[in-house]
Image (cartoon, rainbow, N blue to C red; front, side, top):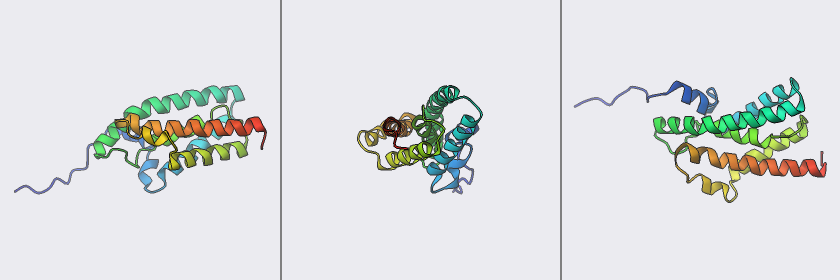
Length: 165
């Protein structure tokens, strides 16, 4: 009779680094919120060092890269963990938060509104956001947060249009 294997699960380093957003997803409970806050902080720092039009284009590019790389990295990490949608994967929150920040001015009130709205839509998952979780693999992991990011983006831009802050 063989003893159970004590070897750790296989880890593809680039996929785990990407999917967990450099380990943030491995902190346990609240990793998605921490990843969203970290994303907002990086966005704020980038915005402080560039022009507003560069920030818009940079945010769009970063959101696209996070989404596209995230689909593959999340798929790999989920498969290696043996879970459908592991909480350790937080690149979906990064992508969704970046989407929620597209063309948002570098203003703390709108940035905070973006964060709160994205997290609310990500947690509550209003229709059809919840349905997107049913998609397979990394695509399913990512798309509900991408949709939540677009919901938050729409509301933040409505707030901008109404000049509420």
